[in-house]
Image (cartoon, rainbow, N blue to C red; front, side, top):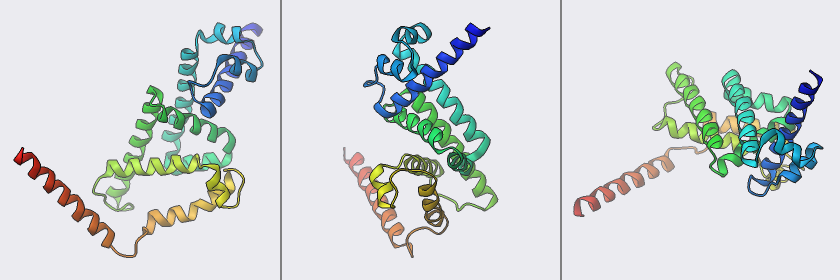
Length: 217
């Protein structure tokens, strides 16, 4: 039993070290020796437990995806931010890992993005149905926008945190961003609908031009 527990502990240490390296350096640049050194084990033990870097990445994908999707379904969009504030270092690492997976267009990144967009779209449609959310011309695109905004906030670049007077992203920055974000989503940004009308007119003109070109062709 002790040996089995030690194996599980070693696997978890290796997995957690790999998650940190993959999130920071990306999959291609990370090597198993660096992961082993961070985990405090030999490179041979990494191979013993996971077989290859690809399989180690798969184990990390499954772990992080399982944690984040479970939180998404249990907590909902606003609950995710609350959980982050309770444990910013752990949560930010997990989010950065999946953002990296999305950037590298991995299967896990695609699954994570699909799950978040589906969750967000479900929340938006429920809000529209009950009257707490304004109707949208494209609910799916709006869901993508809300996910994009949330991920960008949770992985805010250091120059942007410094612009708010902080050395790194954490609860203080998140609190600073909360009211402006809610003001933006509640009241909007523009004082009138002139920009919206201009965008609609440009979109309709582009569609008409495209349709005319196809007819001529």
